[in-house]
Image 1 (cartoon, one colour):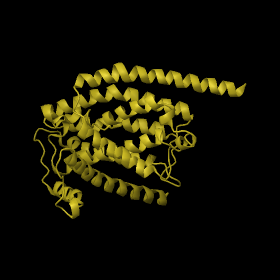
Image 2 (cartoon, helix red, strand yellow; image 1 turned 90 degrees about the vertical axis):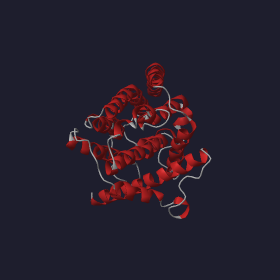
Image 3 (cartoon, helix red, strand yellow; image 1 turned 135 degrees about the vertical axis):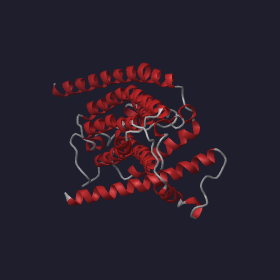
Image 4 (cartoon, rainbow, N blue to C red; image 1 turned 90 degrees about the horizontal axis):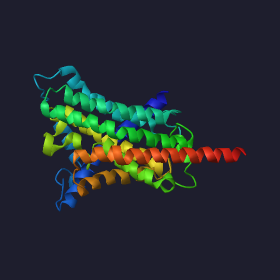
Length: 310
């Protein structure tokens, strides 16, 4: 048990370092997309910029609104960071952290809880702009998490297990991205909405909400909110790799890097959608398609199992 806890601590440290350099990658890539250099002064080619940003943010003064409910206002960013890091106990590695036999169910629970830190950050700030941001986030979450849960159920039906370790076993011959390509495409939209990234970054709509739910945070609280977001990007890249691209293999780190780069590239490529278009997409496009795929896969698995019995 002690070795597993040490393994998890090392994994969390690696994730935090990955989060730091993911922010640097994003700023450099967006810079080149916009025909500029990006960070290039701190260290060699800006390599120390994330550490300079961390020192600056955590040493800044923490201001808070006088009318806020201080204790839940203070705890909300910490809870968000905790949820984004505790998700990494699901990391499936040989002799790894914890062998969850119900890992997919635990993943759904974490995804469902991830809205509460955002809601708390906006609600307990007692600010109109922060409240608007958190309400939009809650509505967005309700819209797409129904489809997300059904997609995870589709994966459960295919592998007939709740464990992340089973995903690699059933993708030895063919990856699920080839077997259920439309479902994998819809999962990309779900990932972007889950992590509040462009073109679905409505909870942080700077142009309408003056930064949204996190407007009243500064210093360490502000840093924790965005560290939780970038940690979620890495984790959703891991989940996408496990679900549709072969499970655990020697190229897992490269796949996580590639899909994290995809998040950054999409931000430089696409503008933000209108909010009503997200609602239309979630309820009238994704949900019926996902339900249809669930019925199709369930029928296929039932028919295949009965043919084997005969």
